[in-house]
Length: 496
Image (tube, rainbow, N blue to C red):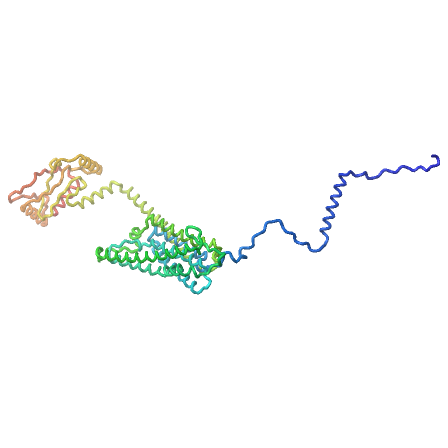
């Protein structure tokens, strides 16, 4: 229409229409922003919601039914345990390798056991809250020390006279008297102490070690302790009776006057008293069982206060054990050095003089010490007469002595070969002395008187004025075949 007002078209929008995908992303971002702002605003304290994590166990000490208690560090603290173990190892190995060095260590071990037992008895009387496991731990120390004391050289020594036998019996009696308090406490603990000493209640199980993890309150374990105690008492009484019977029997056999006495610190006694490999292995196994019976109950029952070195009393046993071990190590090293030094001396002597010279010296000594019917170094047999009458030496060949067997011929051939190697000549005859008559003895006496007057006896020839005696046919030895052994025997016969 001409008169109508024309409306201009609307201008297009400056921002394009967003697509539906972008709108959804913006809406999600705004929602998250709102939620975060709402959480950041101060509101009432939030209530705790249950967690999905697993429930944690409470602390160990919060439960009163656990088998845990504070031990006595003055009886079985860490320092005392280490000192005992070091002393055991040093004493056992010292008794096997150097018994002379560790002779005094056994006495120190016995005194330590007595001191430990005295402390246990005092604690049992003074304390009202002693746990049932504590005597078991201390008894492990005492039993281990008693087993180690069995290797004492004075216990292994075999007496050769009555005085030594009495000394050994006195030592055994003193050792039994020292360990008698241990047996007495063991009897009390097995029959009364295990039923009256403190435990941590029915819910707590006190564990101990007897080749396995066992309950110390079990009925069979208590019965085992009682039976073991009775067997020990019977065995000790039987051992005492056996020693008494042995002493009575040997008192009629052994001499009253003692032989040259071997002290317990001498090397000869130490070598005689050295334990065998079987004894050494048994003692090591027993000490290992005693150590486990001490350490495992402490670990299984969570005993506190005994795994530190805070107390001063723990340092003394540890220091003594370290000193004993150092002494044993020094003794073993010194023994090895002395052995090597002795071997070097023997090797140098052998190189200097040679084996031949030593063999010659040995044979010369044998020649000087020949007796009736022996064979000298030149392969000759000598039969000496014990009469005071003079004797005449005659030489008889091997054929006149009778038939010689083949082994004897080989032996004599070997001896001739050895003698030729050292520069001597074999005479090949057997020297035989035949007792002469009275005339020969008179001639020998005349020659002795003449030699005393200064005349040479070698220029004189013995003459027989009386009737001749029956003698075996003589055969002079050629001068070239006379060895030094023959000349020496002839000279000794002239001197006689």
